[in-house]
Image (cartoon, rainbow, N blue to C red; front, side, top):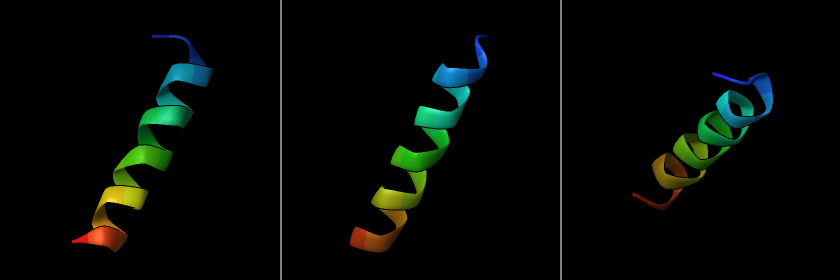
Amino acid sequence: MPSYISQTRTQLNEFGTQIS
């Protein structure tokens, strides 16, 4: 998996955690 995709997924996961 390309690093930029992994980084984006991590950012989305953190964003989702903040919303919850």
